[in-house]
Amino acid sequence: MTAVAVRGRTRTGWKTALGLLLTAIMLFPVYWMLNVSFTRDQDMRKSPPDLFPVQGTLDGYRAVFDQQLPYLGTSLVIGLGTVALTVALAAPAGYALAKLRPRGGGLLSFLFLVAQMIPGIIMAMGFYAIYLQLGLLQSVPGLIVADSTLAVPFAVLIFTAFMSGIPGELLQAAQMDGAGPLRTFRSIVLPMSRNSIVTVSLFAFLWSWSDFVFASTLASGGAHEPITLGIYHYIGNNNQEWNAIMATAVVASLPAAVILVLAQRYVAAGVTAGAVKD
Image (tube, rainbow, N blue to C red; front, side, top):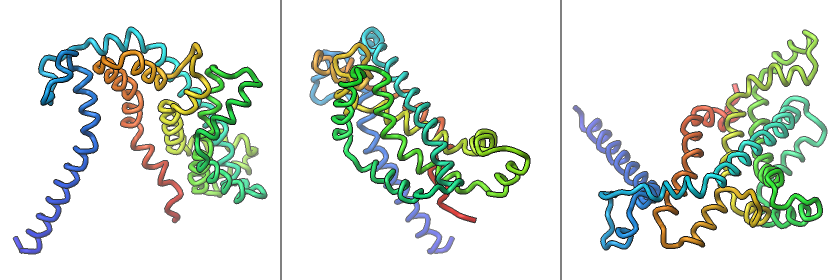
């Protein structure tokens, strides 16, 4: 083996070791959350703390399923509603910007970029004033609409980039067969945009699932509160029961983690769509 090959292997080994170390550092809070969720109350203040829950308990998870399921159900409804509304609004808008080329399309795309720069708290206060007049405060539909405002600008840009890569000849062939713009969009464009739809759906769900600003401003004190407010209230009312608090955080993280793992292949393709032209 030549000296160059040895140096190359050594360099690769150091890079791999460094990558593993950085990954372990970033994931350690997640591991510690799991560890504490299984730790007994009497072991919580041990010094030094146990790195493994040797005498673990499921009391925290029992508390989650006894007290937090309504919050989880509300978050699931809000997340799915946000996904449906985002895709329903953003997919036709992306198709129009990519293929129909409306007048002022470039300005509209710029406005979508600007909309993503507006702080969420400013939008929340605007929604509060509007919802107060419409009677939508502390309602699930109100939160779905508010969360969609975060996802729609990003979704339109993703759909526009992806649909710009769809061959124009394919759409022209559909038009020659008698398909109108709506039929072409429904029967050809949407099936070909599966990767971008999955990408948009995932990010819309994650944004709504983890939202706290809109939830605390528009839904606090209502009958239907998402899991972020559930965790917030639980910490305020039970600030000594850290195993239950961490168990709630673990359960709240599972849906997003599972969806991300299952959809990562489509997300990678959807995010990079339009970046490379033939």
